[in-house]
Length: 318
Image (tube, rainbow, N blue to C red):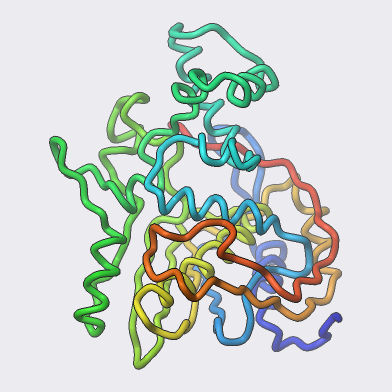
């Protein structure tokens, strides 16, 4: 059922889309040449006691979101888990890494379709070319700290929250300058893309756990619906494993933008009236962050409008 009520929390997202269309400044993506409109410095928030913020004005790929988050939490740098679960949202970034090697004369050139076929059929090829470098999950769970030492930022925060919930330094960062190509100077040592969702801050107030995300670069049409649902789900999971009730998910944006080739799709989405948010059910028996599996999650009452297709803009590199 559609809700013609401007207090619906999804209007925060829709209003930001309209803000960008109306007030955004024109820019050009330096690595693709695609034009975009952009605003800088915005914030939206969702009270997770009032439903799970899975956008309803277009269908969002929740299966992919859950699998991607499990993959992040595993600390892996390889898309093997995603490929095996038929989730292909990171395939183009693996291909970008392969193209770097092609440009350096290290491997033979493959068209994207040929590359996809090989990562799905050849386990040795997937093990080698499914590698993305030290991306989100690596930084969260295995932050390179010199030599062979790594830091499990998220694991540390979870255990500390249980003992010292009042502390204010539970910040997990994916932004590691030494792993970003322009600063590391090495394709082989760098992550395939500088982190867009850059860091998050976990807070305990009373009996509730809240999470604030800072996202430096936000593809509002394609990426942000994923990011909202992913970090809202992470907030629910962290609340469960630390023994708190879910509080708010707060999403802070740096550069929030819409690519020119998404304008028509955005206008179609803006014509739709939000419906009730669904409920995310999580198996209550899971008490450790590393024990979550796909089957522990179910979404109830999700009644979205049909999906709206849009071409991804694969940026990154310097």
